[in-house]
Image (cartoon, rainbow, N blue to C red; front, side):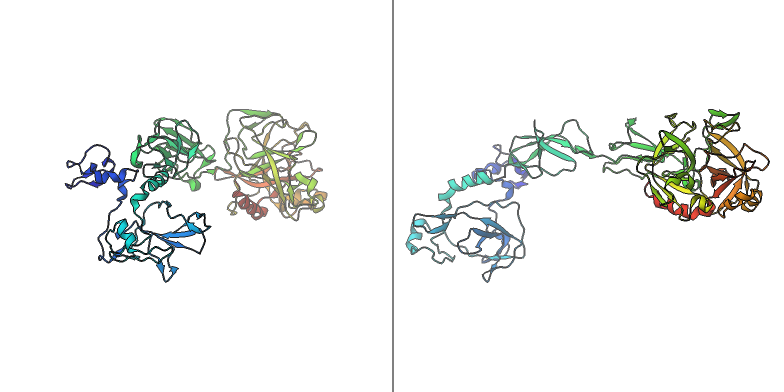
Length: 600
């Protein structure tokens, strides 16, 4: 603020503007406004003296325009100037207020070297120093003629300042006003505006796409256009500022750029966004005051049976949502049967009856169905090891990078090319894990189980969901309990099924199973097996094309994966087949499940 002589206060920008805003006219006085002649900003309080300290010893604030200049070495153009008196004992004692400058070296006609002693070096900003003291003595003005009489000419004489004593090298500043004026006009920024740093805002000249950096100097009466960075919302249609005299900006809008909230994306939530009661796309950055509502997707639910309530998220002005998205878990082992059915020999397999089931295809001349499998997570499928026997002899981990295998979820037609675009999802295989002790036929198909890792992840829906896994061994199955299995095996007329079939098979423990098998097949009833089927009925069990499919049992209204179709006695006239027990291998499966869960 500028203080008028009568004590009233006005804004500094009104001083020396040609209009008397102080009643006494002190804001337009000749003495005051002469300091504006070359653009010096009066707000710098030039020429004011702090009265602290004695007359002989003043703090730095008493004469804040003084700087000391030190030469670093003889005949060098490297100099330092200091805003504090730091020259103690012929050494520079403090560098906090030191600034390096270069003064050009000149040579006269006698080849004597000297330094240009008129140079302009601009100090940006001010420093308030309380720890350094400047010792000074005041002296009276002595005119030029008297000064010449009192001093003996001589180059390089020692000079000291004493009371009422002039020295030869003390110049009359009025003589150099034209030179100083040119330097001041060249280097002064008092009338320039400085591009500010404003969050989310970029500046450019009107009609230009070049970005002006923060700190750039702008001439008076210049319009600067304001735009928003990526990720910020422009709150007003037009944004600009105009540089006025004395380095003051005039702006025409309040906060222009509002930080946008990040997109809301979730594999388990349905998210709907609105802004001012109109639709907004949640997958894009959101404008402040956008409202998002969430709920679990179909085939997902809150963990531990929690009841879901509608939650609103609000996009705040700081670019952050007021709450975090929660996570819903897939509803494993749940069937979603609709009215559409597929028929095979009079037996119906409803769409959604086993949404965890997948078809595994191998590339030959075409992609041929070789096995089934069960989804246990978004990127893992459990199947049988013998489905991938081509590489078994050398590796327990099979790396697949040539598209040899394809996994199809939501698949009801056997033919690879017949795909329901709304239901079926195809995935490439990344790698296949087998047990170390699996040796195929030579090992009697013991440990006939595989975990298939997908290159990408499934998005779950009513037609594609995982099967539940009994990680903690909570459930048991007794002889006679009926489980569900689906597949594309051989039908009663010895032809392969063109569509997915479903059947229910009773559980048979390993001891009972061993006693039912023919003598030559008993060796294949290894410790990790159990049986399912009936000794009295044929044609209703699993067969070629069903290998790797999951036998699932219902517990607490959810299906759990209990066995994996392994092999069948070719000499038996019944529906009994061998299944690899999932419980027997649960810890191995669990380790892979945990390892790949972090890559979802």
